Image (cartoon, rainbow, N blue to C red; front, side):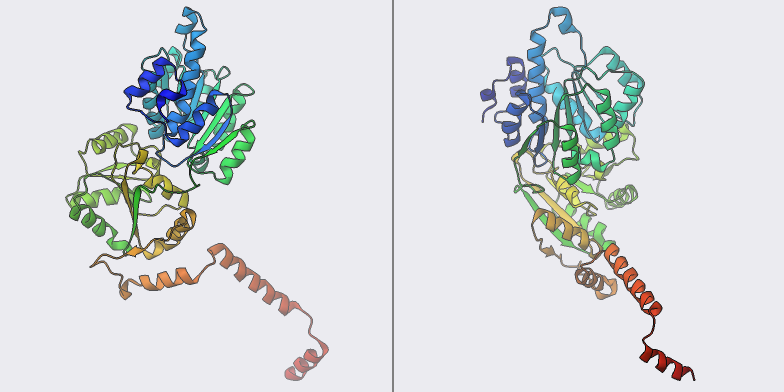
Length: 437
């Protein structure tokens, strides 16, 4: 469907075309008419399918139309009408930049607030007034508590990457925000997955919503080539360096499990002659921005990141994603590899899997309904002295998790104690008396 066919206002259509948009993605085709009709929405689509435009374009269009009915002095006043919540600073900044490009030919304004930076410049922006505000929940509540903004007049509320916000513990912040808003605003929840938490929150805050799913839940794009390399844990870095070097990969996003492991990996890659930058929660916002800029501009070959970047990065034509460590939550695998193969383009995602990662890989395979072939590159075969084979067998043999195993053990102890406490039958009692004599 062409962008010309949905009846956007002339200013917005001009901006959309300036951004290079020609056709709407499936999520945009389904969501935009629903939002314009005033429905609350619970929408799910794969990462990289255009969710930001799906909710922001109709909201901007409605604000443009509402502005036209006001007198000139009222048009010049920028009162907060739409709030977009995002889980991370990177995603909030990305959404704000997208909206800036959409409103470039209008009188509307957009601002962004998030933690990790000073509040002074953000406060100034809020005091000047904005029509649309993109924010992380915690920082928004800080400004609200300090009375830097009013939210009673807000007409539209968007929860972008709702599942991620819930995973990060923002539920209470979202609930506190809703208590400060008027009784009902048009609320849109966009999420890459529909977890139980997301559905519970939707039931709590949405009013007779329309539900949109444009792809199978937790599916990955068919445009992404996915591979799994089996390797012992202590040789992962060596294998990663070889894959990058032999294939001459120039732009690789690598996900590490912790900030500490990310720091160590980046250091070792540099020792191998591979320029690398870091992006994780301990880095200042300025350092993270510089790392992203250097990576986007190909000044460094590798960006080593933790899951803080899994949903906030939007690097155009990113060719490669590597899971150095598999994520604890299987759903995060979908978000990680969704950084490549965006907007219908192709991409490559590989995972380095040691025997201790097998349980996480099994969860991923179950989630996305796919069984991966374990590739072993020559020279990286697992050996008996690694004791990795025994670990693999133990993982495959044990279908029970630790909790279940502990429960069975406790039950066995309890049964044993019961049997000891049980009175002896007369026959057994007589035998025990004879033995004592």
